[in-house]
Image (cartoon, rainbow, N blue to C red; front, side, top):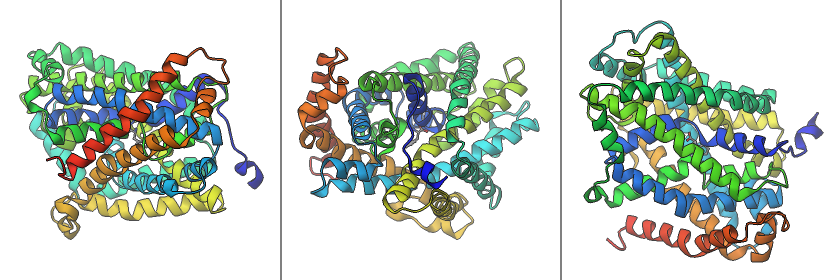
Length: 456
Ligand code: PHE
């Protein structure tokens, strides 16, 4: 048994590779974070910067991570060391572990909100609720003293159990079926939202670019989101790459994952913003945006009472598979590098997430003394969110791009990305190599410099 868990698994087909990677990418980032950041940071202009970040920064990092994982078939720390045992590069792996924990601390809290909304939807809490009532429901959900902590526990225990029971593969197979269903539900919402009175104002908000609203903060947020969205900069994709089949076309897979993930995010935005304007709200609702608008849209759809239950069930599943991929990074590290049994590693990591995650959830409750803890002036929730998305992931991405562009042997890279010459993708490899050496790291460096105020 033990031996078996030490053996490295492989995904069986190219399609399995695609769906597994997508199941990490698609999650709360698409339906929760993407819309609310787009709302907070100016709509179309934010979106434009986000697209640019995906193409020039995120995609090259994604291809690099896939390469590093598939080439070495190891966890991120082992993988980097296998390519270059000397030098500071191992820090990529350690930072990745820290990022995984930081994200899990607040992500599990939001996953808990989603779980609790399944039961609220089931009991008909949202039926005929006005925007004001939904606002209240959300505030209670996030900041009650006990309930959100219990839901967060549920979310973490589900993920830990899947890992301990070894049914992760089964879950991923299931997402192949469920993800399209989630997509169909979002499209139903889109159709309804687009036919609401005043819907076009919402569409204009997402797609009209007002260049004057592009600020340093907007750029940083969009950059951070592109990493968060595609699960980059912390070794998740290195870990998944280590399970890839040897004949996988990595550049194509990365492209397909990025495009699909962006489509899901955009469709979520199209379901939400027309409703925001139609119901007279402002787009700057913050983290509650999804929870305050989606019930309103479903209330106007035939069989909406049933569909909304399904929507939150599927969202909870998407959140769960994304969390699995984060926990996988830390668990594989403990199993392979520290020789801890898988069960112990899961127990240890989920306990850490439970304990610190509880504090993060408590920070949302103004009456709790924990809400007074404000590292860098941010609530614990915002601190872990921003420290991971805006600092650790892009920094990890910068190091990965430098590692791929300047440390890894160029010939090796070409051979591997073309599957030993089998793929006729010389041009794409050339574009990738150019981006990863000259564009990706330079852009990341500039953003960091401007963040610490060097270039104002
Ligand atoms: N990409 C996931 C989402 O959008 C979140 C995630 C980030 C998963 C980093 C793994 C690693 O929900």
